[in-house]
Image: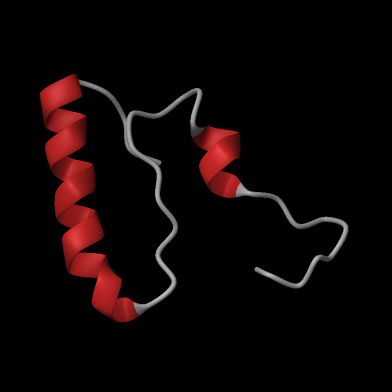
Length: 50
């Protein structure tokens, strides 16, 4: 991530069409909050998080 390597892909954009929640976690400290958001969004919108 952030290397500008030619094969680098923005996964949030890539999976946006097929999921109700997609966010990249870059630090272990972010995981609890992002996981809670993902589960709540998936349950309320009856869809899949990426």
